[in-house]
Length: 256
Image 1: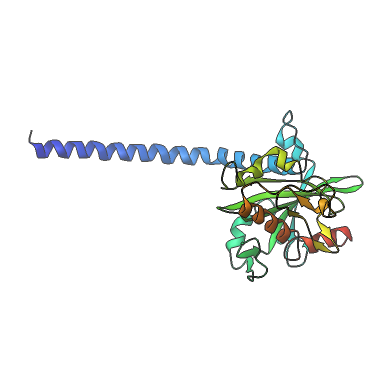
Image 2 (image 1 turned 120 degrees about the horizontal axis):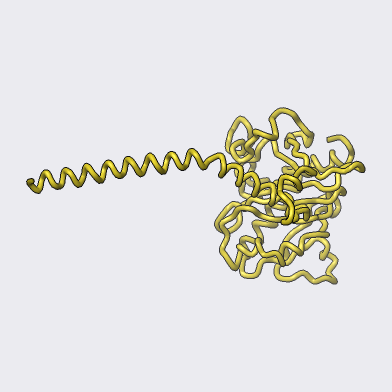
């Protein structure tokens, strides 16, 4: 057998192996996609429960999430809407769709979003007495990435229950401290609004408990100034006039 024929066989075997591997990988990806989607949905629900202070690892996520109703809000009116289905609505995709979102002005875009979707999902914990907690999706740019998370409020639509991020690419040990349970434990009880405006923000350093601003301040992230500023900006955007403030006002007035 000539060298040319030998090289040809090697190339042929390599090509066949590549084809077989591609088929195996593609088949596995297709078969695993439903399971991956289920896991993604479960993780999202777990993060919603954690933000609301309701997560119990001894119980299934589905059983605990049964107490939460998912609704859609029209961000242009601050009203509930049935224009889209909460089960199939993809909020991330809609934020990039010119037909389902609006461009933000430079002055309004403090969270560096570029566009704000027309519709948003919200999550409500309800009882016989009415709404107990309100969980809102938030996002905004930090130092390296867009942080995606949830902020939960008490029924007064002003007192923070909790805040947590389920996706980001901030620096571990610095901006990545947004995942630190000790830092997240500083949020419950903080106030959002003062004199009608969002005043909740991260401080430069530790909060002085004796300060007149203490109820509206959370310790800044040490060594992560830009991530801290990003968290402040995203909280103030989504709880402000361009975000959920009109909806929260309507909800409190019973007009949502």
